[in-house]
Image (cartoon, rainbow, N blue to C red; front, side, top):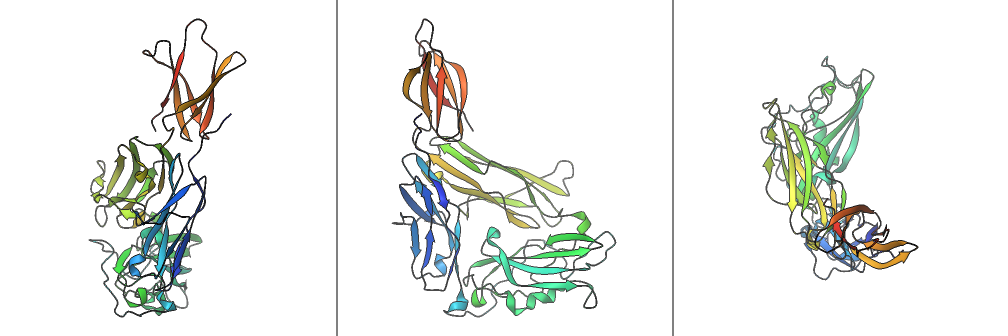
Length: 409
């Protein structure tokens, strides 16, 4: 059986890079079957960046952002994952001063600062740790500073916000003026049970040495009872399949479903492509059963007449009491043989045999006709690898024609 060419498959994904200001950052990727590449910065093509390696020379704050690459061949385009370029001012360069701006994490956020209350009896944790998380995007947050151990006795009876004044919390990999997202991860035991909770998220503009340790009023611990679970958070309930091979000209509908509580404002969402916000931000819909307490949304992103430029990584930026990035959906676009093409018809024994080439992972309906006007469905073929063999007994007395129809996804 002759196999059709398939879309490129990434064997090496680009990785995050951290370099001093003025240095060269190198991103590398590799995809089997690729004949060329196109690198993108924040979703926009980089002129001349068409090899498997991208060098960002004399890296400056304006170069910080998401880098990704599209691998191409005659069959179509496939996107890589995304990598982020950080600048580390601890290795050299100008040290900026000033704390920068410290807006609250959410409008109408009224979390109390300083304490974690756990269990139905308002007791305090027995022991645990507190760790600040920070990064340039919600899905790029990493530990910042020390993980501070907590023990209720004999030191104190609860966690304290004073930790946020510690000097170890600056995020040196963030450029001055760049947005920074902060949250706090708390892990602790209480009454023999283990709990894992995170705070609200705060966004600020980086200042001193790439960022600043926020003051006590900036970041807040969660204060709901651990026994209640993460109800105040918006959460993802479902999403479209995470990897999809689509065909040029198709209509693509990407679906995500979210749910959140209205304790501190109605949650909202906004789609992203390749890490860059797209379209407008929209609010969740109040729940008809408990409209004053919770909201939900089913958001559908529709792409009509899909083209190679629509290949990429799609997700949703969700902001409620907690902020997060939803599941990523990788879209590849096949530009040749996508609708299905019969190759090399022949007879094998008494059967008519033909190879069908098309998009890998898609299904095709084989239809038959005796007059090229009236068609009927014959069989559905699952084209797992890009090529699948169709076989059928020959017609007894009249000619028989075959065609393929791509099954919508």
